[in-house]
Length: 170
Length: 417
Image 1 (cartoon, rainbow over the protein chains, first blue to last red):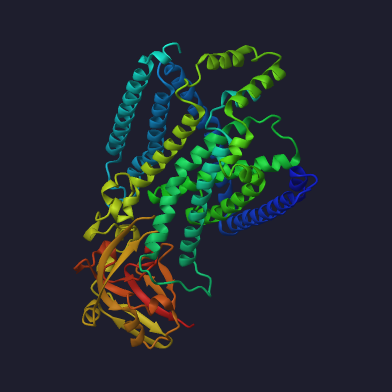
Image 2 (cartoon, rainbow over the protein chains, first blue to last red):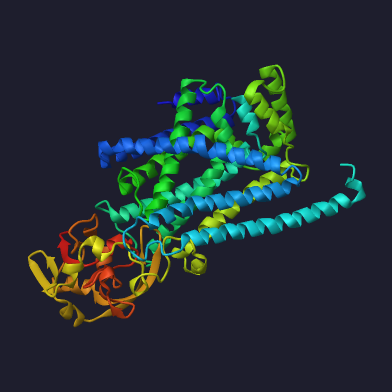
């Protein structure tokens, strides 16, 4: 339905073969993609009771809001704070610390639901058998240690570099 | 809006990086879709469908891959969203009806992707806090997402082809040039370098923050971003994949299952208590009934034990992504099928003692029924089958999802081909 518009938006007058090929490829992809999307929606309406669909719509909407309005600004804020806090150290160290926080946070995101689920799932000792809280704490510790040693190594390197006469002016 | 975009600028946020991460995420989505489709049709085959029974580890491999790729989607999707986040504030927000459609498709893509990987993860924890059925929605969203992926590639194709190789980046311009353009644009928009008011002060505060010092050039910064994404992927996959991939077993500290943990060293998906079979499974009068056409025969456990026994090594491979290799001993299903003179092309319907549950009754195609590795198992790892594993008798066949390895068998019927 929207292919015609996209075509005109992308290239009003395809002159070269490349442009023509691009136009054909885009039209095909958009058509196939739309078909897949519609088929998925058909399966959804076909197999899930209509009364359950608002709940799904709510979850999809909430996911967008959660990401765009909570998670992303939080990451943005952390980035700024870190940049300000790290004004005295070399940028590479900031990157290491940033990376460590990101890796730890993503693991936390995946493991915390397991901790919550441990209290909820039925009485089956083979599901969620680990001590996830302790393991997560150890993981953070490991990440922090690696980041610290890495930073120290980078700091030592930058000090050595700064002591050279050639870079004293900067 | 432009100020927001500018404040969010970072060397890692550029079209080339969007293509690099987008490619990996796209591959992960396609792998998830393909393996998911295979799993779906194993459980709900179309009438003409037949499946390979070798290698016997096929389903363990395909579904293990499904879950591993799904878990890798967490860092990849978050990275992709991080890269393109400033586009959220593009101005004007909507340029045309077509642009509106494009943005709507992206919003749906983002929301549905996040929901898909979240419910997939929580399903492996057997935690269902959502108001809709998991299996149906996960399957339908799979199609929705693969459609949106192709659509997205179609919409972004000029950018994708341009930045597919590193050359595209160089052709474009360098980051310093970008910064100059941004400054010029700021002056054009506000008549000065930055707007006044609270936002102005915020931007000023941010700008007062020295950008990364010379040691962290944009290239280093980009490398740092990629390293972070790589380490995060390695961590989430490496510390969970041991639940299916044996060499990583020692590193499995976050997986929802652990190899060897469970009755008789095998994890349990659905317990006898959940299935409400504790009484019926241990009842003395239990018999396994086989029917084919008019022929019907019943076997007690003792009778089954006195028949020729076969030992096989096959994995239990769950849809939740874990798997466990085990040694099973029991009667070949094909032998039993011959006793009731079932047609060699007949599919079988297996019925469990459980009274409720979506897999109480399942069907098995002739390729599995006649496979020499397919057993009505009576023993597991050298012991009488535990009731949690399906005592008095359960099905075990090569290359099938665990939910189809029917426990607490009560009836096996040939369905006329």
